[in-house]
Length: 187
Image 1 (cartoon, helix red, strand yellow):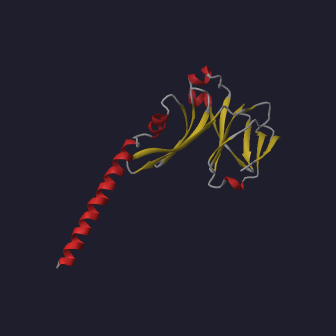
Image 2: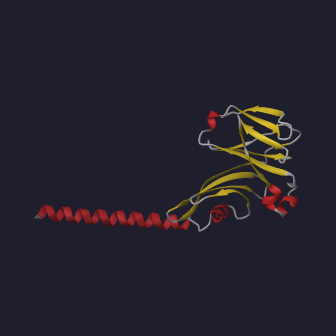
Image 3: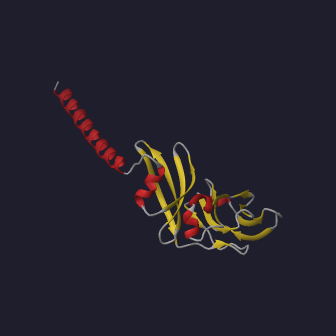
């Protein structure tokens, strides 16, 4: 009988401990979770200018420009208590593709390559043989694009589970299919 009492008390103590840990974890998760994905990103940098790439039921990808004109990326995931930002990357302004030459790009982990280009209606970046997605900043940023002199600038990005399989990035003229520049992709 005494053995059963000790077991019962141990189970109750363990249960109380687990409930306490879950309660503390839940409270901390609730504090960093938001109703909308953009709220999670703006909570980390309220002055960021957001450029949405996509929002699904449980994940979102945003690019953003900070007040110092740095461009970055952030993935936001929907968890048990709402939307949370995974992590953000941003650098000093990267070179914009102009004059039909690559002038740099950024990476978001091993999942995303992104950069800026002028004349995005005429040019396409290819990752091997796959075209990158493009976002017209004038359409996404409205008045900010004029203020920041981004009227004819597009953000291009390529997302994949395994970017290490990419060999090269090519800049293609969409009208003529001419390859204007090639850049070996460095992992």
